[in-house]
Image (tube, rainbow, N blue to C red):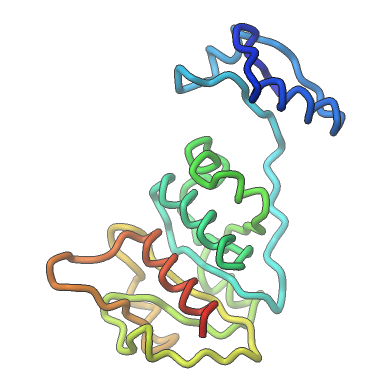
Length: 203
């Protein structure tokens, strides 16, 4: 943990207390913080090892196919954890979930999430056998009409922000569509994940 010497507010004092309590090494290093930080109001920087624990078998998952927006990624992680889904599969190529923008927008939820990257969705399916629900603009079933089999773990699958899911996902299921007015082309990816995760938790 790196700390900035010129700021000694309650937040910094709390960080120092937690570091001492958890035996986390910290140092005061203004020069290094100024070099690493991309924001002017950064007073502490955590240094940690990236961890990819793998996804839990027999649990619910969200899979994102080639996500490209770091802010969306952090919001999706935070939202998924909020609705009880702590397993996130990511199909490459994709953003780095440990990019500072993702970590910040996840509001710490990334450290409560099991994350695993896959080269393809086929690789994911070779390892997990959940019920698959793909979300597509051309989906044939409206979300509110979906009947969820609670006896089996499920996977909610979403495409990237600009192009959605590729056509080869159409063989997996009829697809789910989240209806909205004709005044917009589509919903934001993070919003779509939030709506879907809430629905599947509620039914």
